[in-house]
Amino acid sequence: MPKVKTKSGAKKRFKLTGTGKIKRKHAFKSHILTKKETKQKRNLTTMGLVHKSDVKNVKDMLRI
Image (cartoon, rainbow, N blue to C red):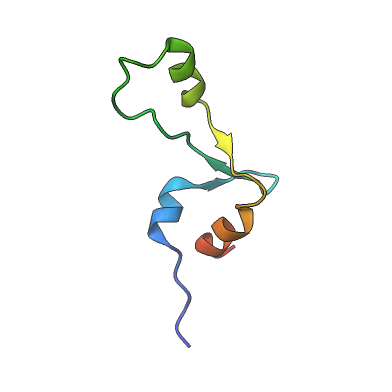
């Protein structure tokens, strides 16, 4: 049997923390920023965590 490969799109988008949680970046921060408030843009800059209902799917994509 060949090795199971990691989904390359997932490995670019998600990182594992030391405690096993999965970090992600926020969406809506790449363009069309003139109509967004400074507070919204600042909050989108910080890293977020994957919701617990999505953790299983992300771990399957990362082959964890």
